[in-house]
Length: 330
Image (cartoon, rainbow, N blue to C red; front, side, top):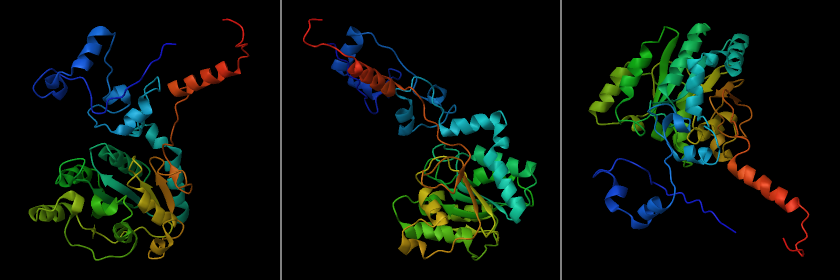
């Protein structure tokens, strides 16, 4: 019986033969021998070839979803981008549900998530699309509660992104809160950080007289990068009863702790320290956790069918179901 082994070499790729290519410089003899003796080809593993937007950074989850799928599996960021391009984004049923809640209960709209163009957890284009949707539908009050990056992009780059956002602001659309991601997007059960951020989103706080750009420029002078910006409120438009909240991160892991607080599912000793506004409408761009059932999802998870592993499994089951007389010669 011939056997085939699939080896995945982490961190290994094909690049230009130069002094900056470690694999070329090392000239690994066994690997080079394989290339010389056996048929081989090169696959693209970036951008549109694996369901990512052009120029967008990749992550390990791209490989997990793509290998063996037998097709391009569009990543969440590209899927959302494509819907913005063809304008189906603006007809999304969850956005229609958001608008209906606001109309029926007289609440305010809040957009919550990471301000970034790194494309790892979120993207500014999605914020701009949500702002555009709010303007198209005459949402009476839209507040942005922005977590600042400084990790997937330069450490003092939020000010430039805010300048881009401000071009689309109106008197009804403004920044209410800025918080560094080290506080607002903790995923290591440092609940004190998440509680701090949650309280700045939902409880009255001291309001700075500075504008967001002025505030950040002062922080930068003190050599404080975006990631570590302390929570700061710029108006009194906190998340209150009857409001609607859209969490616009498309990657789930660093938003779960915050959602647990909103859903009242954090550990009891943590949950009892915060007050959750009543009758909130909660939505997220993608699914953060299957147990977060009260949260409406704009882009639910899609599972590719008949992947390589699934096909092999079905063939094995078919083979085992065959009635073969093993005592007879083949």
